[in-house]
Length: 522
Image (cartoon, rainbow, N blue to C red; front, side, top):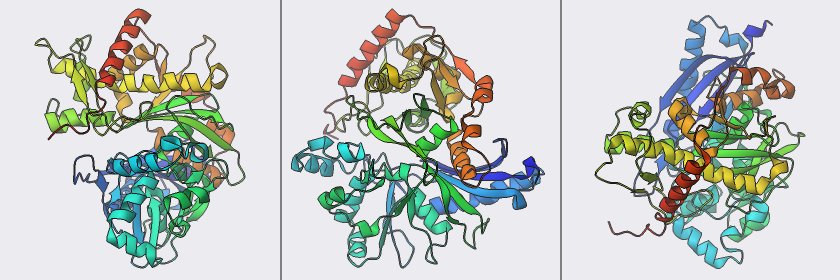
């Protein structure tokens, strides 16, 4: 078969939208379609999705992307060989085994309703907030699936009853999609992959299986949990009734792990993805490094059943691009997200304004769910351009906080530097098209920032995993990044060190002002 007649599809199910992208053998996209879906905010700090709407968005995206690629002359019908899947992590749902219907909306990763459950566990367990860190690498936090599952068990009668009678299935979004796409009620496969499982707070990082002592401590039944598989293996085939029946689903990774693979991050290399939140991961190879500086220990990827496991240090930032959406949708300062670059570029500094987007608390490295957003340093001189620039800077400061912690945890030996002794940060995600944002990031880090020609590396990573499992690509082809680097854009720091240090000091002062604000009177 000619090279151009081989294709791999990638489902990229994010926090605000779903995409399906079709890649050819040279990893170039030949067709894609994207659908946004509804965000539900039933109470302050609560965020939910409708699992049925997400399922339908996947179906529509697959159909439309295939139509577009076919219209452009690509023989996708016979050339599509596999599908990969990448998804928003931690987002949790329970559905009925007998009806196939969700028993509640999906509770989204950034949802903060479980803070009281977290406090209760911290007081009750001898290890406090870090009680499970040794086994799963994660602190007790509203962020992770186990806490969301506990909330569902405690507060939703339909969930409680379904678990009691053996009719409940638990999953993150990958599990829900795979179960439905492989048949649902008619033999659907109930699985998750190691990267998504590593974000539940229930998987043992070393055995790569559900941790029985953790399940016993939390009172969670193993019966409702999916089987854990690697990131690159044939999981099942697409069932009749879907646009591409019979096609193998052969790759599955949480979105940030997929981006690492799409960026071809080897041991000692890091990437930062800028989306709704921002997520920075450093590949630590086969070594599990326990963070002493507020980061998470997690899986990077495991590319096959018998393949070695790569681990990572991760810093998760809850609000990055979401702050730009807030400027657009809630304040009306901009009418489209892309306008922020031009508005912020009208001033050469934030004019002493510092914005900390702790809308639902702060994640790494602070882990303060009592934090709330602040905008400080406002004077009569302040205008909307200063605020826009402060919002962009807030993303970059948060990434710097995480990378500083990473440097401390990994040490000199744990990081790869170029011939000039510089640590390069690979970047991706929708917000990276903003050149000003990337320049600010390089300035605040004091290190170069490298943006690939194709910034949508999350979908590419899932395609790589799927293609690897069915023999379309080899690991050497995926990790040989020489050609990719030639096409990348590099942003070099232009800010002097003294100014950088003063700005970082002011940022830390602003962060400290966000603490202990969760109970402010409405």
